[in-house]
Length: 368
Image (cartoon, rainbow, N blue to C red; front, top):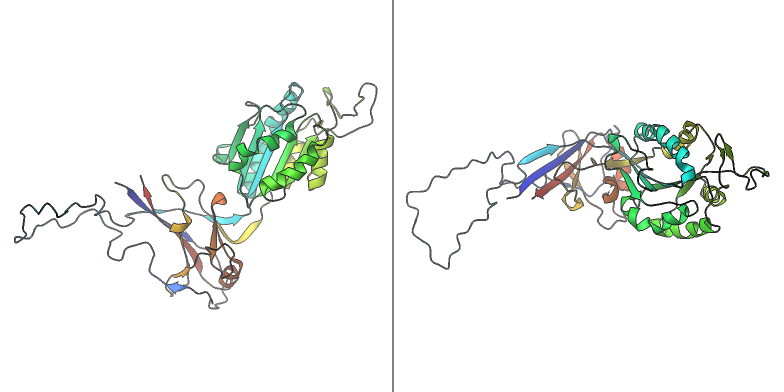
């Protein structure tokens, strides 16, 4: 028999104190999703007394006295209250790492200093997903706080094919991307890609993502060639990089990303500016992030949600859902990939002028 869980989120948000009345087409309502004839505090007991004059004879074969097994299950008997926070625009970061033999020292440096990156995202309180495309064993290990937000794609990345691997493997990491996210790619290599790969990437990736992106390159700049260094690759403590990263740097320049030198021996000097560029929190007015992951056994479903406005002394009022997705008549929308509820601009503007709060009732989810 299924267990039912009522999730109620009370979002105490300051909405101003002007005292204006909303013009929303909202309706007074009792707490939704609770049957008025059912006691939500039901403890499982009921009067099983049988009236003396009740006919206990066997019924006719044509009469069905079967009782649904959950007939006595009260509506949402268990209440789980969870917290939420103001939402920001989500950020997805995809690293692709050249894992050829010449990159071993660079990868060790990157892994040793990656804490700078993790701490930057945590301190900025960003809704971030971080993806690494490289061979198993080359990606760094994230802190426990990134559980459910860090993903590895085990893929051999050779000296020249990193850009094309991002395109070829897109279907394998697409599931971790959000359509409403700011997307950053970071390429790490001591070599170049094949000529023309940057142009192909610029033509193809926006169509795959459905939006623009920023590409950052940690590759070799070009210096004056010498007999010992005919390609003009950068110089580091161990010698020379293999080749200037023309294609990688072209992507960074085209998309407004930053270009960092793979020959920098101190990777703190590389990861600090990269983190500062990526870890930028952009709050969403009247946007609210639901807990990620959801409470154990719970599945978020916008059809179960009820968004209410509460003003002291007034009954709860239901804010309608914008099912059309255009916000033409106000209300709220749900972004499933980002676990976010967002008030439409018109609704947000009106409620910002009021002294009250928003409550989000996640409704009832039947658990197996």
